[in-house]
Image 1 (cartoon, rainbow, N blue to C red):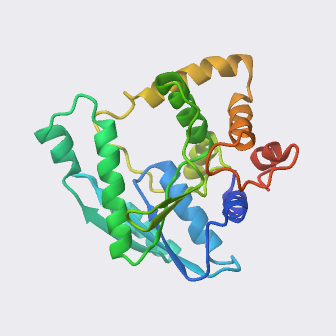
Image 2 (cartoon, rainbow, N blue to C red):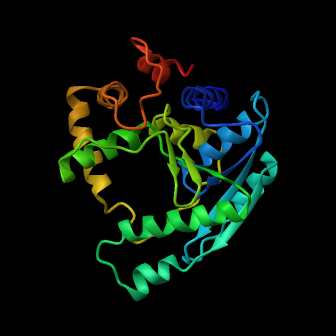
Length: 253
């Protein structure tokens, strides 16, 4: 996947779910990982030619690990995107004070709250996250295996308590594609300093999916198509036609 394909996939997803309105200022949560940076690149590129005029603001939460985000700041300058770094005490609360044995849920909740608050302070009513197709499938499998229910996040989620609308414009991209694009474009990927990184239920689900891929190479595409057709809540607006999910994933149109 190259940048033009990224723009095309993002636009297709944005159009399918009516993610963008004229005059939107969209906050992109930029963790420093490849997926959030691809989301930033995709929306910043789309803003240059999309018929509905919108702007993008990049927001990074400094969790307290002493991470250097200067390269991301320089990248935002090349995109013409405003960049904000928000200081938090999330690392101190989760690891130093509460000493959580299973820190991911608490950390995720705190990060969501901090990002939404920062977005509102920046004048944004929408927040774009870097979830891609693999995340949809793995979240679905996690819900099925660990909770015994059919569930995953939706392309667009309105949070009535905060007035924030969460967007996931990267859903038509695979993780291996964001990895290759970030390497090809030399995106300023910043290493995750969290001590729990990699030791998660999601990692275990990835390992299960790897076993399934040995039998069925397109297992992710098949499960993603099932999520669309079921449909799970929030996916109902998808204007599916026969074979469309394969076109989206394989052709990048």
